[in-house]
Length: 285
Image (tube, rainbow, N blue to C red; front, side, top):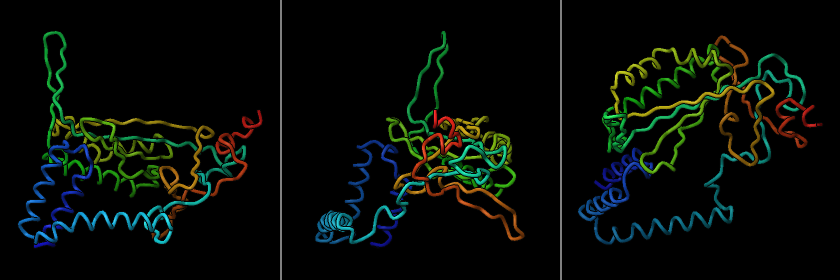
């Protein structure tokens, strides 16, 4: 029974991990409910010990981290300075690139399950913006997540055709006081590939559902930026591989699949922003 209670609690916290999914009073109600369940199934001595043991464990882990006795945190950090470049570049620090390519497309997609009713007056007309107070528990939220995952999976499977380079994990905007918008930042080699991605069956299914108002409480957005060669650069200092530094490029197709190379490479000590762009002449001016 204790294992079942733990599993249910862990699953609920994983599904509702963002603080803004519910109001503070709702979270307190959740906590009170869990306390009542624990009091029903567990002896009082164990219930009293649980918060004490948890806080003690936090203090111990913090002490081990401070003394570097236990590598629990920051294990993905890459020490030193790194930059990211496409393999078409002869070098990220020279004036020339190996081909006419080298531009990067950044595509930001965002989604938000709206919470509050917004009244907007236009003359004598008043329109209501649909909303859902249930957050991730809103009917259809799971289906929306599955569509998004299918879109990214299809992008992975068509790296060669569309020039897909990679994306970030789910990004969360906690500054929103009403709901918690989520975003995905992806990278592409050109705009044509991104346009081809938008014309896939999975993407059309999502757009058809949105246009048909199947999810009236869902808000979406996207932003697209294109940086031609010589107009973009990256630097990562004692930082985990992230964003474009985590992207991978197809360099050749093989019989058993495709060969990918990482964009991340050591940064030259004498590099500057312009040199990483391949525009050293500006650096000398």
